[in-house]
Image (cartoon, rainbow, N blue to C red; front, top):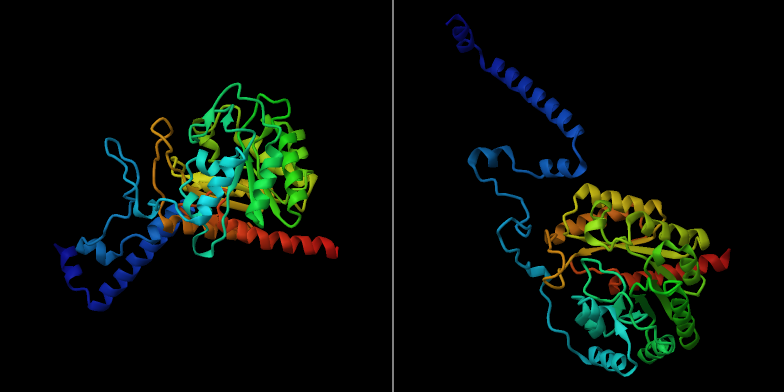
Length: 374
């Protein structure tokens, strides 16, 4: 009772002092708590509801509504819905590919950007990623819809020349050449890659060529063959974070092997622009994505792209989460802070997305002039 009387006798300034002391203690506890948290947890706390929202019960949940929950169907968010492809550029590319018996990863992998890239959009500049070495892959990655076969037909010997002819007809300034994995071939198809680049450069002397290759089963001689073919950009994708490699990729592929491919390119030709890509929405954590980006920078990779994983068929891995455009913007900022020359990050961005190619064109010209001056 005596204690209560003393409390009741406190003057207003005493209440103010007690309040300030409690506030300092709370702030001190908060700082100690935050120091042991990851950057993403700190952001979540800092962006959480205010004290007023908490008291009034007006705080709204910040969880991504497009994250898979047990027993519930994951619906496609509005930012991933695309129009049916059409237009004169789209039709022209389609006709040429059919005539010359060529394949594109755009079609085989069911890329959502095919209408925009092939149609050219408002800029009327068509872009395509041609897939060589046939359309049947010897691997069975759980994210990819390209047909698989342990013993595909032998590569078409006319494919390098036909590819170069198609590109000459289109009159492009930049082209991406990729391939299926051909573990059945002694060199993994590296010589076929190199011949395709040579043929392209002979017919279109001013064109810039990007090659998106596999890992050649870790055989670095195959990497060297492609690097010395005269290409301008060497791309190889790690695809996902380290922890999810066995779940997502074929057993013959792995994280360290992919990083070694990218590192070896720089050992052979330090000025070669290198590029890699990550798919998000497979169940990775923010810390894992950050570590993957750091690993790519340690491998001296110049450009990175981050995009949304899309389940191509019911037989493939399900999407765990549709990452929001705001989150992709966050990773773009992180990429710039880590020192990548270019970071393309967005729900519909793919490893050969055309926005990156326009930037790479300027980057390559700049590096070319630097080498000339030296």
